[in-house]
Structure formats: C-alpha cells, structure tokens
Image (cartoon, rainbow, N blue to C red; front, side, top):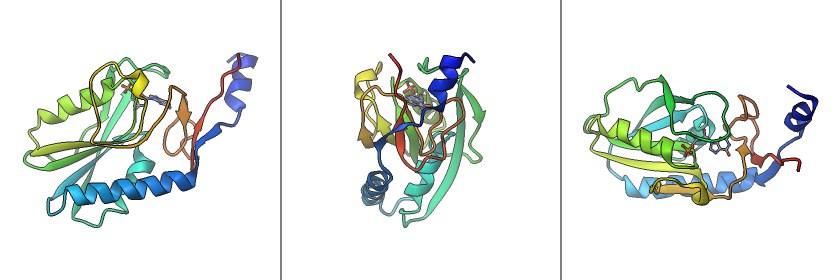
Length: 183
Ligand code: 5GP
C-alpha cells in the first residue's frame, strides 16, 4: 500500500445516514413487510456478508413466524465496481420450494447481483419472492430491477458501515458513512 493509499484508508468516513434515521427507516420497512405478508409463513434470507446488521435489525421488528436463512456471496476480489460475477460462499440450509421468501440485500448498485440472486432462488421454486434493499443507487443501475422495499435511495458515493465493508473493514459503524476521495 502506498503512503497516499494509507492516508486515504485512515480517513474516518463522513456520515451519510445517521443511526437515528437508519433505525427509524428499518422500523418502517418492517411494518410495510409485516402488513404485506400477514398470515404467510416467511423465509427471510440474509445476503452475507453486507446485510447481516440490517437483517438482524429488521427481523427483530417482525412479530411473525419466520425462518432465517443465510446466503453467502462474495464478489471476486475487492473491486469497487461490480461485475455481477459472484461466488457463492454459503448456501441455504433448507429448501425454499413452496415458501414465501424475502431477500435482504445491503445495496443495489448496478442491480446485477440482485438479478443473479433472484434467478438462482427462482430455480428453487418458492411460492413468492420479495426483495428488500437497505440502499439503492438508482443512477448506477445497469439492469431493470426494482426491489419491493427500499430503505434509502442514494447517489453514487462509496458507502461503508452498518454491516457494509471497505476491503473487509468498517462493518461495525452504527451509521452509513461515505469515503471522501482526495482530488
Ligand atoms: P451490484 O451488483 O448491484 O452492482 O452491487 C451490489 C453489491 O456491490 C453490494 O451488495 C455491495 O456488496 C457492493 N457495493 C455496491 N456499492 C457499494 C458501496 O458503495 N460500498 C460497498 N462497500 N459495497 C458496495
């Protein structure tokens, strides 16, 4: 790592979405979901790793019978630009055939990852699939996809925190921050 890169990675992220706004929106999302899936048995799927904090906050507001599953995906390398090429690092434990599924994803950027996830889950013949993204970057979309639930629509900034990493770090921040680039 060069001295310039070291300086950049040490800069604390700026706050984009403070904790209080995140928590309020998470509660709203949970009520929207609860209203829509009333009476159904739901399988909530957390896309690892970036969604684990968001997922655990939302499900604690969902007062309903719920199974939790984890799907581990990792992009190749630490690229800041998505290619949509993902490697499955952990598969679901149980079949989802005939079940009502809600997928929780941290960020929809180009939309390629969520498209890949939906194709792969659809092949397992669930009764329905809904998607919930904490963040969406509408101006970066490369495919037509609209999650059923979106926490916040943001610009093109590279964000970290609340489960979302930069090269494996910063997941523990309680807010969504962004990294300012030196120009
Ligand atoms: P997509 O395939 O929609 O372009 O990318 C989705 C994935 O790219 C996210 O799940 C996330 O892992 C990564 N990603 C997209 N934007 C950001 C960002 O601003 N910060 C971080 N840390 N990851 C991002």
